Amino acid sequence: EDTGSGTVSFGNKCPPRPRGDLLAQQNPTCDLRTYSGGQIACHHMFSLLDADQEIPWANQPLEYYLKFRFWVQEYNASYHLPVKRTTWGIASPVEYDVPKCGRNGALGCSEDPSGTPIHTITGTFTGAGRLVAAHFHCHAPTCLSIAMYRCPKGTEICNASTGELLCRQEPVYGGTGRVPEPRFDEPGYILQPPCLWGSPDFGLEPPPDVSGYVLGSVKTANATYGHHGEMAWQQMYYYDSTEEGEPDFLV
Image 1: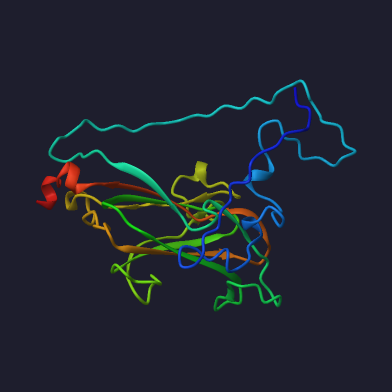
Image 2 (image 1 turned 90 degrees about the vertical axis):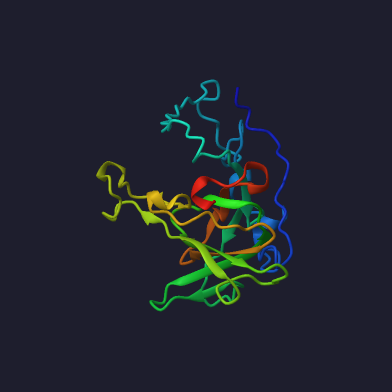
């Protein structure tokens, strides 16, 4: 039964530059004393209500269903390799607040040529293996782009000026007519096409080697309005050629 009480640990930890920008920007999501909203604000058995409001349906748990669809391909030893998954976040490490940018002088704020307020965060980390897929996770309605660059070892600030672009993703917003399947073209949602690497037989570029390289990411968000719980979460798939060898198309 929902009693309207509960606790959860505060696990947000914003690293110093150049690993991430949020600590230097004094982003509210870095400190429990300034945290004002996001994924930690609502957990199982939490009720976000005013103190004088009763909890509706306290003894009636809400039920929901998830539907999954899986595409599979027959294993081909000459092509398929086991891949590993890792996540490289440049926020706290997962979420952060996008401030409302204006004349308040908030750090990370700027304007694009059209005058739209833009908030930017950056971060660096050390790569591993050869990349086969990059899924950059961010949210509607603020997400504008996430770009990843590869720089030589020892590079302190890795960005467009110091490295080569590996992947840039810009979300496709639902309700704009740009989503190929009309039934999925829903306002309020975004489609985030991933970056993929593989065999040239499928029109793909070869998997880039990032082992030991400095990888830098730049995330931009629309900051016309403030937004809690935005993310800059890079979900990466790679393989280790020292363990698995190279696929035939790279040999």
